[in-house]
Image (cartoon, rainbow, N blue to C red; front, side, top):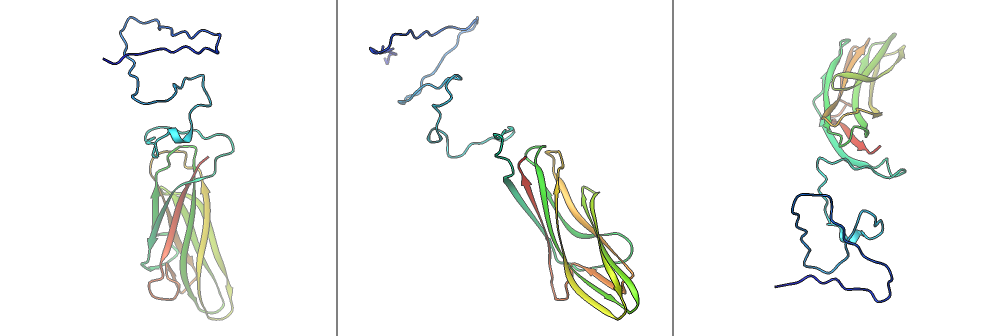
Length: 208
């Protein structure tokens, strides 16, 4: 039968008191079969990184970082789409979207998007290409690209955008782009003039 021994310290002059709680239940404290030190709530310097498991499962827990340690990227999600969309003066989905589930409601989502386009227009008229960034169907940012041309124009380019959003939720949120054109004879989203021009959207969760 193994035993428990309490060894005194010849250099110390204080008393070590093990106090029982105010309870009517029988409790069992199991000691580990290993050398080491007990850690109490009043000891702030004993736990070291080497004492922790290599992987900590904090699922369902909220981790509060010390002041000044926010702004770190916690996860990255990417969406791509390569089917060309013929635009008109009516808003339409580009088909480009991505979803992300924030780990804390105080965290932000940084959205980056790259959308190729082609615009063809006859002379002496105004042309415009418009994009609307949405979260779960709600408009967050509206951008208009346009100008006036006195000659026939055929323009290729790409719309690059960024948006830092605060969705204030831990539920899945979807970011997407709608588009439309005004005045253009032909306008295409997700088409930069070469075959299979693809668009992409990147979502990054940033800690508060």
